[in-house]
Image 1 (tube, rainbow, N blue to C red):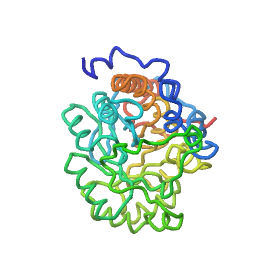
Image 2 (image 1 turned 90 degrees about the horizontal axis):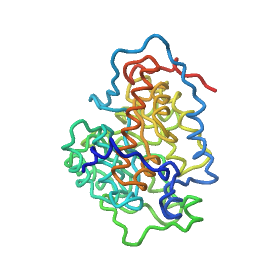
Image 3 (image 1 turned 90 degrees about the vertical axis):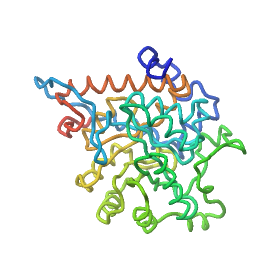
Length: 358
């Protein structure tokens, strides 16, 4: 039986709705924990729920489409799996299973630099799937510029369609919950796409290796694929990136509350970024989105697409690729119903006038 076959008959068990419920405690702490006191982690989810829908009545469309336009292409749905590291900890299907499950349901995927599966294997698994979503590759700016370009070219040769540069984690340290649970990767853990280890040493040496705007400009000029910047929260940074032609898209993200605590929820940061960009490049968002309803809220606020993380990890841990496909299938069905009930035909017609803040 294929992933697509099981997606129509299987629904994730209750464990998938309890983050980490089917994982060892330390692994669950790594995937579902956050930085500091986890204020940002909690705020992300709560902020979407404070937005209420204001649907228009007597305007039910005759047809519904979940398609979107993104980077000059038409895609079946407005969501992608976010870049998530070390998915083999969640299930043996790992990144390949997540990618295939997403592809069968019209969802896209951003493969993490810290994936446990070679990027070429993931690409081969999905590229024959009709109706799949985007296939993008995330870059962590570790190592030298030559190593970045080599990895970017490798992704392009494998068939990836865009690069996503993570810009909000120049310094990393163990998350509070994961550290308390004693989480650690095995010493022989596979990371076949990592161009170089994360910077180590004194804080001064780590800061010296952190990327800056001139590095982004170099990558934008030399990358073989369109470039999106992930981790933008300040509208001035968004304006700099777009005014200076340094990107093809922006992803509003606070790293799921995993890197720096006390950040604004992405739902709160999104409107100012959309206003700063003025539709010159697509703006996407991640962080705290837990349902198709949250996706509708994000799209109505001006996002052109969304990235989904922890709900997919929970599904993958609970039932592998089949459970991921089932989750995506449920979301796609719910999205169609939500569009109809809001009185719009497609995601691009969603508008801030359909929202009310609590």
